[in-house]
Length: 126
Image 1: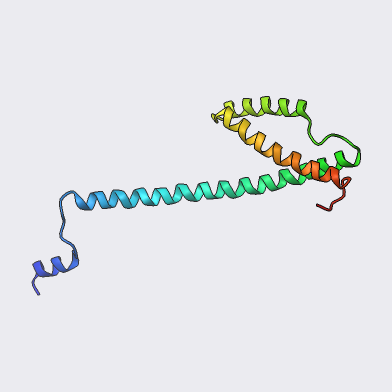
Image 2: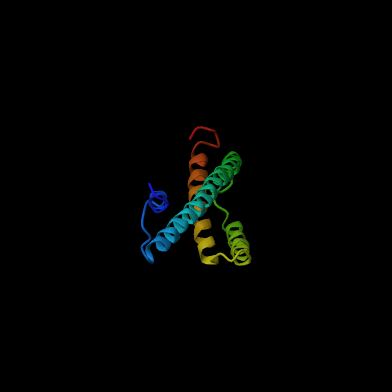
């Protein structure tokens, strides 16, 4: 085996102009994409855990309201919270309308839970 043959054996694929660079860039982009998606997945997991904690507290509120005959919803508080969350969203460069939609979705679920608790008198049986 000559030195020239030995060199070709070490380089398994002949260079094709413009192809290798594109493949390397695509591989790099895919690797970066996987890293970004991993970060998104971690944030999603944290959000789920935070929502679970939030709902634990809203269940406490619902039981307290039910035991004392308080209404399941508090429109004045909801208005204050919407204003507060819209301001926080603006500061965080998040669409305030999205923050309000999210809050309204969560509050609707909370009120449903509170109404169910009101029907049981605030007992833990749901």
